[in-house]
Length: 80
Image 1 (cartoon, one colour):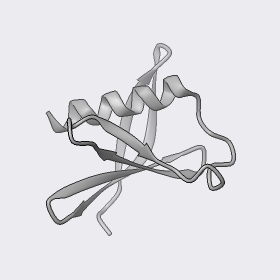
Image 2 (tube, helix red, strand yellow):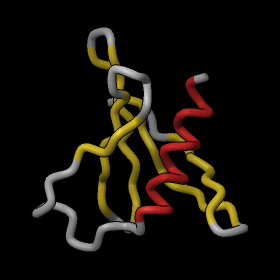
Image 3 (cartoon, one colour):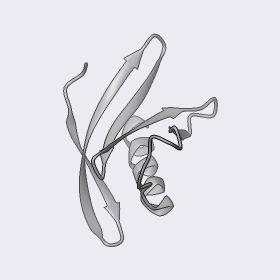
Image 4 (cartoon, one colour):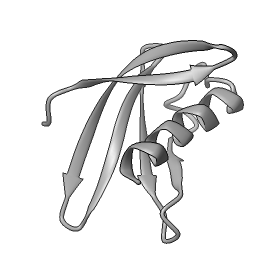
């Protein structure tokens, strides 16, 4: 597995730091982000927008949608 890095996310006028990993597989990649002690996977779709890969049963306390959107925006800014 790749080494973790700190992912700073702007959310509600503050900077939150999440532990994240960039996972490369073949011609694509995914980000694994630790949010509220849960590992969430994000991958780019065909239009290079990130989507979350989650099993509804696996995510016990889903983070707020606006936080997920802030994480996605940060990841998109990183790869552009």
